[in-house]
Image (cartoon, rainbow, N blue to C red):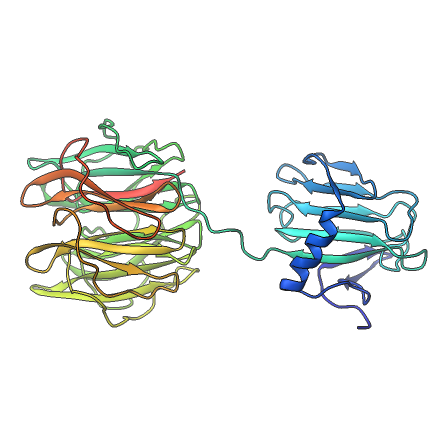
Length: 441
C-alpha cells in the first residue's frame, strides 16, 4: 500500500491545513483486522491510570486512557525515540469530539512532518496507536480508529405515575428498582391526570406529558423526571392538548409524544429534546388513532403500534420512528389487533407490546426485533387487563404494571432480557389505571 489513507488527523501549521490519516505503512485496515492488530499492540503495552489533566507527557511502551470530559489535553511525546517504540492513547469517556487531544512531537517528526505542525485528534471513541519508524518518518499512526457507536445500554430504574384510582385522577408515583421491585406511593407532584404518556430523554431522565385532568380537561402540561426519579412541577404545555396518546425515546437521548385524542383522533407528534424541551406539533403521518402504545428499539429508534381509529375498529398497524425522530407511514400490522395496551424496551435493543383489549381483555404479547419487526402473538401470561403501563428497568429488562381487569389493580409482570413475561407479582402502591411509565438512571 502506498500513499496516505484516511482523514482522521488534522495537522495545522505554517498557515495551511493538511488532512492526513494513517500513513502508507499502516499495519492494518479497518474492521476485524484492525481490532486484532490493536489487541496485539495493546498486549505489550503498560496501561497507566486515567489521565484527566490538560497536559501530560507520554512515555514509550505505555498506554493512556485520556479522559477529556472537563478539558482538552495536550500530550507531549518523548524527546528521543528508538525504532519500534509504541504508545497508545484511547478516548476514555468518548468525549474527544468535544474536547480533543493535541500532540506535541517534541522536536521529532510526526508522519514525516516536522515539529512546526500541530497534531489534533477530535473523534469520539477513538483509539490511537503511534510507533516510531525512523528520523525521516518519525512517529507514525499505526492504528487510528474510532468506535463508531457507543455500546447500547438501558436505564436502571423506572417510574409509574399518575392515573385514575377508581374515584378520581391522581398524581402519585411509584419507583421501580433495578431489580424490578415496585416501591410504595410517592406523593404526587404536578397536575393530577390520566390517559397521559411518558418516555425517556437525555439518556437518563424521563418526562410525563399530556393527558386528561379533572373535569375531563385535556392538557399538554409536562413533568420532568430527574435521573434520581424525582418528578418536577408542571411545565407549561406545548402542542395540541390531548389524551390517550403514546410516547417513546429515539436517537438515544430524545423522546417523542404521538397520536391521541383531541376532540377527534390525531396523528400529530411532538419531539422532546435531550434537555426535556417539548417542541410544537409535527404534522401527522400514518393512521390517526388513540389508545395505542410505543417503545424504543434498535438502541436509537422507536415504534408506535396498535390502537383504534374509530370505534369499534381495532388496529395492529405500526409506525417506525427513525433515529432523527421522523415517523414513517403505516406498516401492515402483525398480531392480534387491539387497543389500551402497553409497551416497553427489553434486551437493550428490542421491544415488547403487551396486554390490551380486543373487545375482551387479553394478556398476549408481541416482541419487536432490533430491526423494528413485530412478531406474531405470544400466548399471554398474567392477568388479562387494559389501561396499564410499562417501562424498562435493570438496563435490559421490562415491567408491565397497574391497569384495570374490570377494576383498578396494582399488580405487575416482569419481562426478562429475553422478552419472557412472568406471572403476576402482587401489587404495591395505590391500584389505578390509565397511568404512564418511563425509565431513568
